Length: 472
Ligand code: 4AD
Ligand code: MG
Image (cartoon, rainbow, N blue to C red):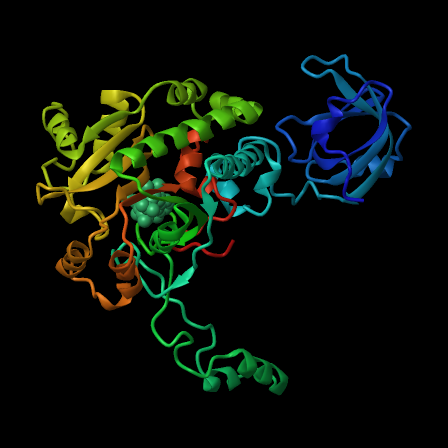
């Protein structure tokens, strides 16, 4: 029966209730005639205490109740004399589904570093920190859907495999079949295995008939859907072959990309701000225990910061204004600032943390440092881009009003040295029934770093994909 009780529900049961508690043992403490077992099942931050009186369980069973063991206790809910919890369970019986040898169980009690926990990513969800991270991740995904669904946006699925470079930045992973040729398939193995591999191998060099890649963004396809369905959003995995090992870049990350017809840069910024505020407010409301834990253990003043995000307007500056502020800041940056250069994370941190103290939206970047699809401004130098920068994180969202004029877009693509051919369908949108439109992309893991205070992108996704790391 899957409709069993979660640990979360046990706290609300009236004393006297006969029930079962399923979970993994966090700790066991023995004192005279009594054992205290803390279990958790990931349903909430708190562990649940089960009391085992002497003689209730066989000594063989009791010995198996070590950290990491998976169990079910049957018993009665009783009032708890301990501080911080109203009820606990008096055990009457136990079933041990799986013991965990204390000599070899890798996730022992305290003090494990984040780096060590990454090496046991398959077990780390059992601990406080990662249970909390993944609960917040779950709720954030739900809050994102809620935000768009209540505003009439349609959730659309854009392809993972594509022939076009949505950002024109060349940071794509190419897709090939694992067994490329029949000859390769036949090499080695039994006859049976070879036959199987031949059936599954693609006899052609190239499965899709042209070079294909993992998508870097669903934006271009989302635009095609917005030019027919008005307001849409994607929420899916995206891939970047950026070979830089930083704490904010992953090779596989999730992106949320709304795209709106009849929207300009101003509307785009307004939606982005409303969106971030509403998602953060939802998490403050729904993930209180988890966020309090992060506030205590990971990032002090996290709760205050998040409340501030919800209640105060973001600062809005043009790129040109931001560069002026940086140039006159009196700071000695490692990378000097000048108009035309991309902002480095030290510059983003100074703007958001030192100067403003909350998220900042920068607009109207030089066209040379932005993607081909952004709408040109009248000055001939800048484009209608906007980046939302957050303290601690830097860029959390990037978006723009899109270039909806066919001739301008074509010359921009060519000017940037990109081929027109792969974008024929994208250009068709401008050829037939074009409309002003805008959108942005939120890096889901960057959002999670922001709301949890976790310092490394590797620690907000169950299995991170970063340079040199794809095992699990
Ligand atoms: O700024 P980016 O490259 O923008 C786009 O991809 C647009 N097509 C979005 C749009 O307008 N629909 O990426 C968007 C966001 C960034 O602001 C950042 O938060 C995140 O995606 N991001 C990454 N997150 C983790 N690892 C990486 N390597 C990332 N690259 C971008
Ligand atoms: Mg960007």
